Image (cartoon, rainbow, N blue to C red; front, side):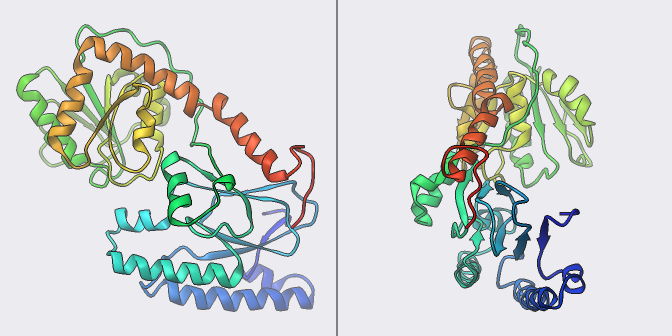
Amino acid sequence: MADGRLVEMGTRATVRAGSAPRRAQAAAFAVWRKAEGVVRSSGLAYRERLRHFHVQPGAFDLIHVHVFHTRFVGLHPPIVFSAAGPLEWLYADHRQWSHQRLRLAEGVDRGIGAVWGATMCGGAPGQASRIIAFSQDFRRWLITNRRVGPHLVDVVPNYISIDGQPRPVPERVTRLGFVARDFEAKGGRLLLQVFARLRVDRPDLTLTVIGSSPDPVVPEGVTWVPFVPRERMLAEVLPSIEVFIYPTRADASTPYSPMEALAHGTPLVVPNYRGLPEMVEGGAGAVANCDDVESFVDAVRRLLDPEEWVAASANARARYEKHFSATAQAPRLRRVYDRALGSGHPRSRTYR
């Protein structure tokens, strides 16, 4: 955007720059931005506003959008939109909005999307030629709840590039781990209950909690580390964890921390929530019932068995390599781009 090839309309810079007609157009968008901002700050709608862009003709073959709501003014190349889930999930899980409040906010977004023909997150495809869902769960949701054509939606998860090393087989599986900045939202309280139950029979178990501020009283067997540099996290901490427990109720699809654990061959225990069970398909871990301490205890216990752990560890690394590695997913992303370009030829230019 800094070089002017992609410009957000309605900002102060666009109102002040350009020809008189262009300034007048930018001023009109600025008025809309202000009016929409009033609605979105009222508490009756989601806070994420619609962003209008202008693309310099011929500047790009394709644009991949990963912001909530967008509309492109004038000629533009094919648009690919990607998301982990709809705003409805975010506001229900993180902000505990009621069903009635969510319906009102969804109505506002539908109205704005219809007026502008915009691409709305978890709503109307608008100008998007293709939609990328990060999970099969979100793809099903788009097709079922938003009536998006199945032919428009591709699944390409988040992906990373980590060269995990082969893990030594432990004599006893004893080291559990959890990584999250928001301890409460990611299920930290439930995790401590699960750990306490497990230690009744296995007092040799340890739990490493990383990324959040420790409680005033840290339970026995728990090591609490508020912050670890990423380099050390990948090189030392994650390879030392033997079972990664992630009892979240605040992730839409494929969060990075569990993905990084898979890359190191660390089996996961995740809840049957949103797209998280997809992370452990193929035996890469276990799935427990949401908010159910006993279900998580049972799931972790299965992975404490050395034979179960060896198989799950190998499956975890295989799951990463096949579904969450850059090597596997970058070509899939390229195929989505080629479909959006229409002819299958990467250099074709189609303006709409």
